[in-house]
Length: 139
Image 1 (cartoon, one colour):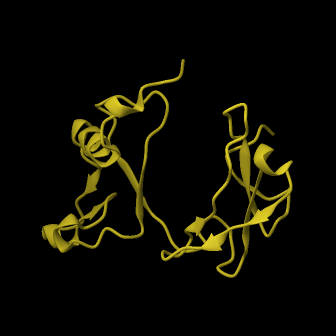
Image 2 (cartoon, rainbow, N blue to C red):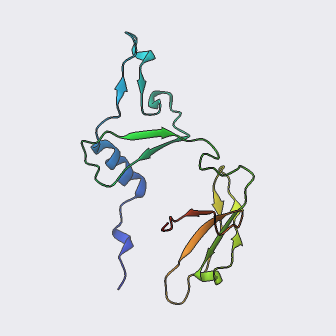
Image 3 (tube, helix red, strand yellow):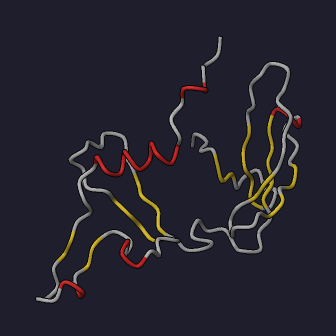
């Protein structure tokens, strides 16, 4: 029955281990000064890593260089003033509004787990069932 989640590693620690196991991002030398060189990662020395994401793909190995990309608010084609709703089997698939969180792009809601113990859901942009943000749906 179920899965013992008590033995799960801390997600942040697990992610840091995964990042350390991969090859470093690509560096492109542009001239003799390393400060002018370009690379596909945030400037870790400056401590400003906000707005960056790392991508892992099926089939990646530890020899696959990390692929970082810069993200911007609304980079998923979602206007900053868009509302977010959640729909699922806990609400008979009726959209329910989510509250804006403290971080831009973060939305919060509480749902009740149905008696069968499974939660099925979709995040909707502006309550539009044709604008499912996640999880991905088959085309």
